[in-house]
Image (cartoon, rainbow, N blue to C red; front, side):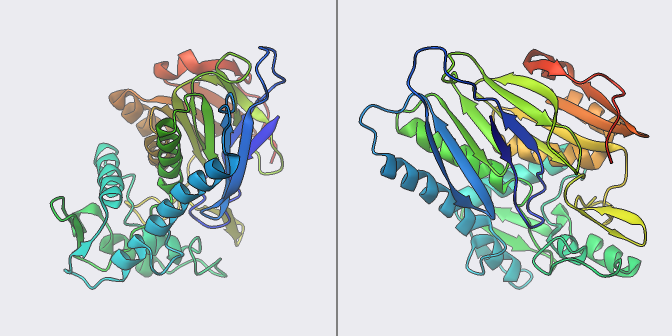
Amino acid sequence: MILAASIESRSAGRLFLIAITLLLAACSGESEPLKLTGASMGTRWHATIVPPPEGADVGRLQAGIQAQLDRVEQSMSTYRPSSEISLVNAAPVNTPVPVSGDFYAVLSTALAVGRQSSGAYDVTVGSLVDLWGFGASGPLDSVPEPRAVEMLATQGGHRHLRLDGESPSVLKQSALQLDFSSLAKGYGVDVVANWLQEQGIRRYLVEVGGEMRVAGLSHRGNNWQVAIEKPDSTGRSAAAGVSLTDSAIATSGDYRNYFELEGKRYSHLIDPRTGWPVAHDLVSVTVIHPSAMLADAWATALTVLGFDDAMVVAQEQGLAVYFIQRDGDSLRYRHTAEFSPYLVVQQQQGEGARE
């Protein structure tokens, strides 16, 4: 059994997902799958290819996957001063900044999810992420002043961005800072999956920091079996199991990346509408979608919304979503109708949640 868990140390790692992939011993007579791994975006990536291509150059496959992820990181990492996102963030207000087609597409997708979630998802929250100690500046020793939170929340927002698809370019109308940590790993998964398809590989699992996409059948000859992690900061146990093929899965939650000050817990998930960390009973959201990038983004958006609003939006968008709520010392498990076909096992309602 392979635990595909995010070990991203920075705020970009909203994922704490996740997923335990149940790769049981092959019973279909096929040879063992080819398993590759490497480092990217402050975490680890894993790829499982079924069956190994005949005469495959393993070194070439390894290098090819790494090159795809390096390209994404050079575009979207705020930890690289020369990255596209860092250049946009450093640019003066009202100055167009040329960007790649990939960067433009990811930003456009993020803005669309923001609109569809009524502003609960917003990639212009980079300054707030830093203010709350989840960015490169590191952890806090005191809670930010409300005035500072309000100022940065007002400074951010999609309304302060102008995109030119012809160039393409991005122009900021305020000193906002972009942060793609809520969808960059998912985008990286999609990029690698598409590259594998171009190599003629049709059966695979790709995972980056917990975000995952699968295609075809596993080496057992059936769908890939994936477990959703139970929200528990002390261990790794499964809340539910799903069966996937030709799909991506991503989970967002507040139970691994947070800090406590003066007896109060602050999540790394910032509500862009208020500038404050989310504080409600929705502790984990898992989304299944054809795109890992969109699964990643929507998992964040729905977590920020809270259960009632998230369920409404998920139903409006036709999303396959699995929710875990904290109810005192217990957990409640709910899902949209679109999630039902994937679900193969689920914890009993009201099962005690370990603190």
